[in-house]
Amino acid sequence: MEKVWFITGSSSGLGRHLTEAVLQQGDIVVATARNPDKNQDLKSKYGDQILSLALDVTNRQQMEQVIKELIERLGRIDVLVNNAGFGITGAAEAFSQEQVRSQYEANLLGPVELCRAVLPYMRAQRSGRILNISSIGGRITSIGLSIYQSAKFGLSGFSEALAKEVAPLGIKVTAIEPGGIQTNWGGSSMRFAAAVEGYESTVDTRVEAFKNGGFVPKSDPVKVAQVIIDMAENPEPPVHLVLGSDAVAVFNQENAAREAEYKQWLSVTLSTDAES
Image 1 (tube, one colour):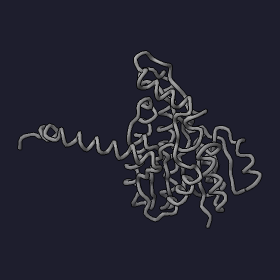
Image 2: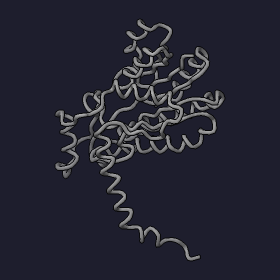
Image 3: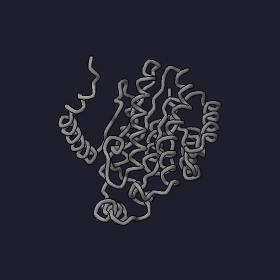
């Protein structure tokens, strides 16, 4: 029997590639986006196999309406892919309150709320897959991406804790943690804070890389989409899945630095135990 997929951010980038790949294999897709008209060509091609709906993941009321319509029309949710989100670059002190809030709402709070909203249906089914599109920036940090990556740290941490909670219910959760993907994430969709004096050799260098093509992503979105499909089928998927050679390089480097720091300060770490 075909699966019912619920994919956010389906009209562009990785979400679009994933939506097409799932449709091609014969499953049903609830394809949500802020502008669902961008998926009209898929609707024309696949008909009732795709349900294209408007969804801003920061709008809880709209989220509940979408899930209500989904359940009424299709009866179940087999796979949730929290893909919607965007990046922002700048010095931590330079972001406006609106920029900080929008990052956490789109990249962390929205996915968390969507998980919470679909879990009652998956719990009743005693089955389901949740794939949260996090980032290698949910495991390591980079200059200029403090707000974006702190949201992704939260999403990866939430995914890990949730996986432990729902395992006895037949629900599997995976945080997908790619490096750069060849989409418009680091290009036209990237947003920036105002420049601040003093960060010329750090943050400003990162900003220039994004603006002038210095950011060269490694992963093919078609291949990433296929991995996501494979994870939805795997009987024992990982809780964290790092993707891309660029992600592996920075992940290994950061892990080595953390391990060295931990060992260097271990005597202090152990010094705070109360006397027995």
